[in-house]
Amino acid sequence: MAMDDLAELYVRAARLIDDADAIVICAGAGMGVDSGLPDFRGPEGFWKAYPALGRARIRFEEIASPAAFHADAALAWGFYGHRLNLYRATVPHEGFHRLRELAASMPRGGFVYTSNVDGQFQRAGFAEAGVAECHGSIHHLQCLARCTDAIWSAADLAPEVDAESCRLTSAMPRCPNCGALARPAILMFNDWDWAEGRTRVQLARLQDWRRRVERPVAIEIGAGSAIATVRAFAHGLDAPLIRINPTEWQVPRARDVGLAVGARDGIAAIAAALGPLVPALSPRQVLPT
Image 1 (cartoon, rainbow, N blue to C red):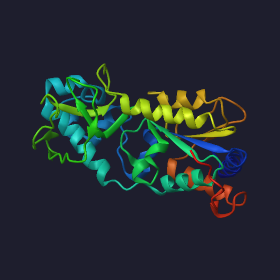
Image 2 (image 1 turned 90 degrees about the horizontal axis):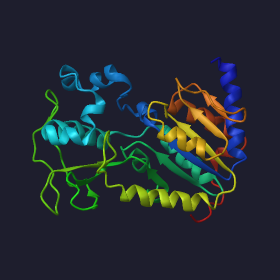
Image 3 (image 1 turned 180 degrees about the horizontal axis):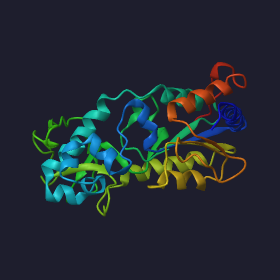
Image 4 (image 1 turned 90 degrees about the vertical axis):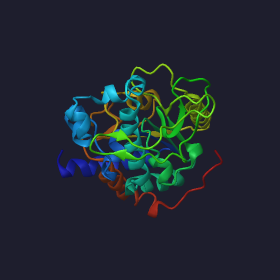
């Protein structure tokens, strides 16, 4: 995509935002790549991030499943324990903060809908009440046996992982109710026992907010078609769409804008184009949500 074409598209995107009264931020895995988080697209990318699993030819879909916890809990928790530590240590890139400022500048604010389980939006300062994590959060736990629907914080969990073998070496987390093995409270592959109560509450908040919005614009970032949860949600809003994706940037309607760039660069360029329309992104009056 030529630079002149991109510049024109950034202006178009800025105008869509300026015409809106709220933004819905729809984020997939590509949102975190510019923060240094690994890209799991395809087995080679996944195995580069987790060489031990690559040597064993264990695919992402196999380790990211309840079956992995039943078959080899130390390996499954080695994978998820490493991810939990990684997400805790990762600093969200500047694009997160620009989006937060942009949402604050809108008359009806903004809301995040994300398939990411990393908690990076909250870490970047987004209010918990303004984020819907459709696949759950690695920062919360549940019982593997699902003795109850209870979900609890993973804040007290400090997993120690042997990176060479991708195995948990510290004590296994346990359900405080029945003593069975605990697992992350996230939606995995072939998962029929995810305790989705927290996500259900988040989605209810999103729908309540959405009813008070008249002219939303959707900004979809790093959401692909392989696991299309976020992309389907963005389409279902029936709102103007700005899609930021370096490989799958095409958009379905003439009014929409597709940007073949990464998350951080795309967000920064839109903010720059929006500057003359909303000087310095100075906050407008934000109504209660």
